[in-house]
Amino acid sequence: MNLQIGFSGKNVSEVTVESIRRGDITLDDVRIHPSTLSHQADVARENGNPQLAENFLRAAELTGLPDETVLRYYDALRPGRSTAQDLLQIADDLAAIGAVKNSELFRQAADVYARRGLTAK
Image (cartoon, rainbow, N blue to C red):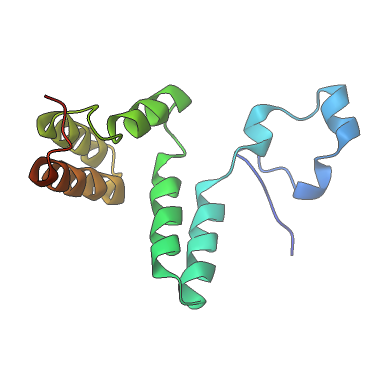
């Protein structure tokens, strides 16, 4: 299998310690590509793990976002960190960029957190 990695399209065989030392490999060369995550979702689903498949698909939606944004979203999901309205705003922002699965996760979190008293006061 000819496996490409990252956003540069380099083959996984090109990533060696020596190529990193030479500076031939950058962070974009080793970032996971959304198609790789989608493939992993297919494998998970085929092997009876639909929850893991959904996690991979949500991750694929987030690959184009800046790391700081992903970390901000992750932090917002921690109990007591966000109001239900904060979570719904993030859901709207995610839907606007086509991250539908993540948007739904945030909508569900807003509902569950509000019902269980896990939202910020």
